[in-house]
Length: 252
Image (cartoon, rainbow, N blue to C red):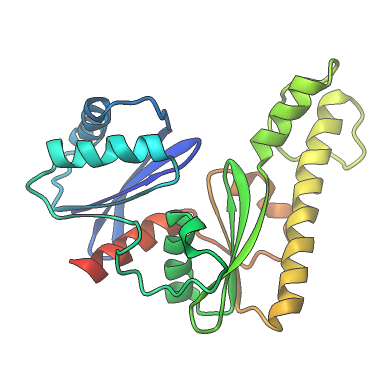
């Protein structure tokens, strides 16, 4: 089976594929301080628990320190297996139609490939992670750019840190938009505020594109506000891992 690894700023998501079928998946905390040996032992432990035999590895990372440890881990623990780490020079088939292609995170390139292959274009991927990323794909599968906004957890942490009488609460839909207590007021601002933010940005992007075939939500926090986002047409939580599988197939 193919092991795909997506190392994000907050979480690392792993999945195994048998052909194009996703078989297993795991989500663990990202620690940029983890050594190559710690990564190797962690991944092997997860795979051993489900008796998974790996035949290849595809990976991407938005955390430079973790990327260095990942490279060393692959060379030490999976040296006998073919592997692809998404970086400049790796064939993705995605044209980067932006000012500075070197600035684009590998996950955004991979998301573009998967979104265009699965849904066509023009399309928009909304990735709810540490930041909320909007990735725009043209009708020809080009990455056109997008937008960044503070993520849900970052916003909650900032409120709790800077407002003396506010605290961290569960990220969930409140019973009404008019909160009757501090917890509900915070939840209302998060749930309805982020839903409105997503819809407005997608609407403006759609105006510039002229048409959009699909708006795809992904990321670990997508389910928190998905019900309030009227512009979202699809939910694919594993789109980055699916894209990694596609990149692997293009290179090996």
